[in-house]
Image (cartoon, rainbow, N blue to C red; front, side):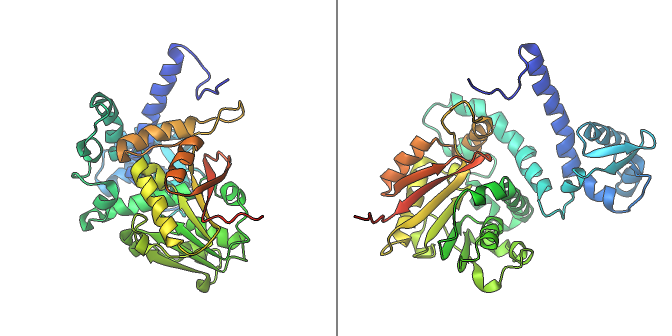
Length: 367
């Protein structure tokens, strides 16, 4: 039996969806305005009022108060003393701009104006039929894909938000995902699309036998990357480095690693680009046998009564509209791997919500 996101039925189900959306509007306004930063600027046991915040910025104090009041209902701020003073809660502090989780960036990217516009385009994309054109997907990014749009100098702020969102995404279920595979017998690992290195840093921290790790990503992402994720884990600088390139260009991929990780990348590719990515990795492995490839992202797993795919199913619609991508099933990945000449090994059904598909390049079978 399928598990349902909302257990209530009938009209109350839709009331709940709608009112949760209204609260979401308050949360994204809170994040966009940087109210968490303003609430922690001056520590005060009595909290701060909307009027104090508004006076410093020439803002609308009445609406700020109403946003804060709504956010208090979901535990982001707390009203203290009277109904006018607010303090950040433990959860609310995650929305400060310097919080290492980058939760604010994740919210702004996933729930902000760009994401809302993407969502509103879904019905028209359906009406356009199977023959889609670039205007379906790139209508918000001047006719180019999101990655090329972010690479433009005038979109530096948007790139910062996107990079932060990817860091936050890497943290989701991080311990469970890293523990889901024994990386200890690899000596050289390349994290393709590794962004700021959060995932690779966690692997190196928990697997001292890994001698070399490379964060591999697009040039504009690597240009913004720092050593922070590795330094906070006290990982020696000789064990990691950042390399710029393109997963679709095999000449730029660091060659002959023991394992390649592709995390939260292929879900934004259509099937043709996904096969091209596999072929690129395969070419980078030329002359080396038994190279492991780990696909780490949301996967629609078989319904055995114990798993719930609602996160993956919802993400799938967002990816379809924003990237012409998709969240795939295990069978769909098997087909794409086979088309590129990679061998499917097994699935690690972590569902955190990411799972891991393990494949192999140039397998040698023992007799």
